[in-house]
Length: 392
Image 1 (cartoon, rainbow, N blue to C red):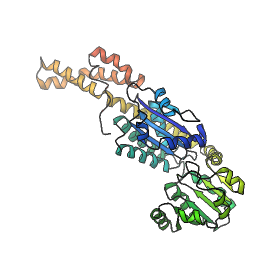
Image 2 (image 1 turned 90 degrees about the horizontal axis):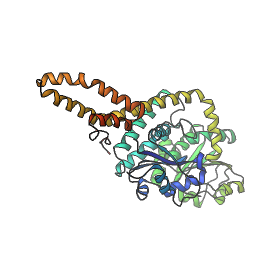
Image 3 (image 1 turned 90 degrees about the vertical axis):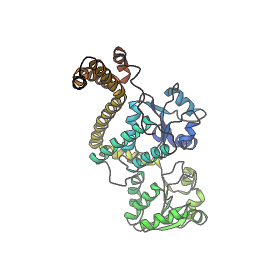
Image 4 (image 1 turned 30 degrees about the vertical axis):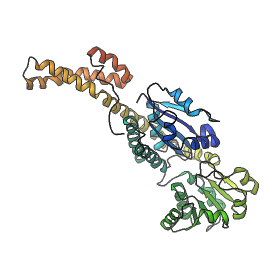
């Protein structure tokens, strides 16, 4: 855990342009491997680009940041290390660090990113522990603290303005049939608006449209001949997909940009008088929700600390396991030289109990590294404190 690091840029810290740059530079763990960071999980969402890395020997957090930031314009990435990195995984997965507090799709995105990295052979026991334990903690927080309804996403911050501004039954075009696009389409459908969902892959657009009971179209057809709509929601990975011509021909009065990189050219929206709701514009609505959820968020923060303490105890126990087993074996070997085997086994636990208790207390209060001093006095330092082995 001491070599676990999280390196990242968020929309809040770096802005949309810097976030887009990091998304495009490091879209998957293979790109980090090329920078000498072979064990990593990339968390790339509309609000962040962050990589959870098991630092190789000889590579410190500043060096990892330097390698990743080489040639990158804009924001310098932030680094969290050790238990700070684990805490951040929990906070992200629980939706506590989202623009819209409590959005539940982020937990699925974190899980999918971890599973994809594992499938690609880019994880190890340290990363497996961090993500599996972090997701378990996030699940508890979401279960015990009611921050948002099911299927809450970033789009939920934009919907109230669309409801106020658009007449009932207005036509809304949703570009992108991924998870974000589907959630947006479902949301506007549920408030009585008519939806057309478009996607570059026609089969996906058809599948989502049939599930939601809305109309669908191929994205190319929409770009060639935009329908008349009152609003457009963009949730694709295509930079500048929606420009001045499409906005003007569609007649849309509102456009919601949920994409990374930016799907909508802000200058184009201003030029035709279309109201643009992007992450910048939605942040103030997210902050207002934070104020409303102040007590619930405080409860969630307490649970984060509880879960973090439990996770670190569990990690320490894994690391101390070899030393504890060696201490028991050595004590048994000494006793069995003069006592019958059964009697020696009965005495082992009694004799090593205090030493094991002290070892665990040292690790809990001061970190596993401090326990090395204790272990060196027992002659067990060569046995103990190797990285736990387990599935990658």
